[in-house]
Image 1: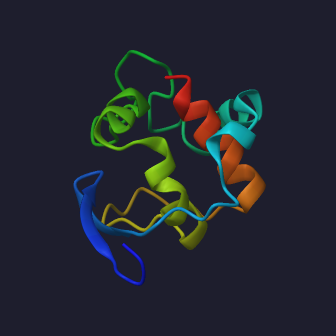
Image 2: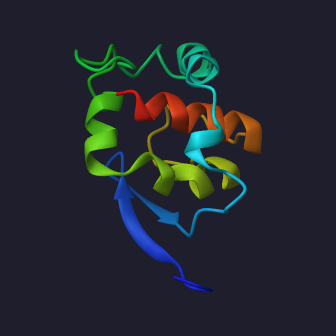
Length: 109
């Protein structure tokens, strides 16, 4: 996808996902730190465990998200900022270290 952009549906809302930077490798991430990040930023609405329903029905559980999208495909969106049409979800933008940690956590699901 060099220089291109692929449109996908994420959380049932359009979002652009582009190639993953080589600097953000899932293998480099610290899953426990990623879990802590998910707990702090996401768990109010999303189920962040391998099973179970989300506290907010409109927010898909992380286990469903990782079935739909390989975690490494989310790196660019996390760096650029997750923006959705859902008013309850804030824009999420992470730094490279946090992205690697978050993706390593998603890989555990």
